Picture: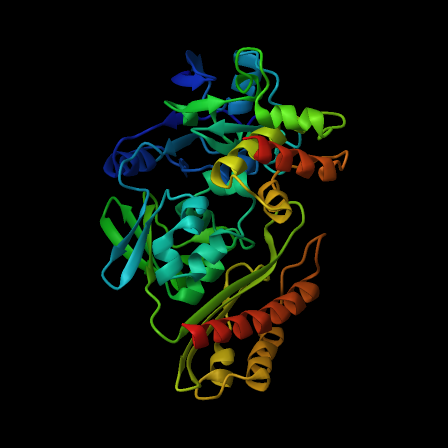
Length: 154
Length: 289
């Protein structure tokens, strides 16, 4: 069985016939070739697969592509505009908010969602807001500093 | 990880969804998918068909309904946590919702999905039983209202009959002199409750007139600590009466669930500590309310 989906990804409307069991993360990575969204734990815990669904951070490994019908999705590839990094990306680079980089796309997108809701977060707000994103390099200190820096710039 | 293949349906009405559930034996309802999809990826669940209720209008949202507040089945945890109406009129529910999973989980997981899944370590069941909430379901034979206490039947088992779908949850508006608290010890990775306690109390003239204490995470369904009521009602809420009430937890669950993370004995101990703290917090809030 194939099911038609129409999803706006990074501003462009995409239409495909997909198997219902296709996860959103595999749709993004394999059907669209947007490999910035990572598969980490594949069990809704690590947050490496986080994307913005209608502006809200969600785990794309725990959602079917067909469930995103009609939605607007932003992946890490959609953040930079005209060759200029998004302020959150810029702050992660500046504050060295990444080591191996695997968790970074998810961290950045969850941080975007956090700053949208709370433009001036405290350290505790940032740590709580990033609870659903794990960094196996344990580079949390600089990640928190990066989100604070991004908040100051935005 | 891929689940087994399944047929997928996205009905526009509840009647259509109900008919699909009846027609396709073993079909499951899909809402936010945060309980069902992980189970399907591990192939612990292998439904032949999914009925996605995400496109049915009117199933999401929070509104006052007389002396109760109705929460639509597909309302996500983040919306419950942020609801000003609930924070004012039934603060236990947003307090509970805010402790579920993490930000991303709360943006997708739904109240109806959580309770229909009936995970013994989930947060909503414990709070809803303590509140004396009502679960509204609709099926081929029309609408039924089920007290939360009767809704949770066993491990991952509810009172839902074939073809029935949870459509809403009704929680009572808390009055003056009511205080409530939900406390949990979250598993560090999954954030599910290793143990949890929900307390709802009424205080009049400095004396406890109602005490509803429910613990979660220790057995197949939430457990109401009936004897806590006896220890508190008609008494002044102080360290002695609260301690006596919480002590009832240890005696209550003869065969607690244990797993690789926490033994049954440890879970019950945690639950009794959380019960004591939840009662103390609830009484503190009752004083202010």
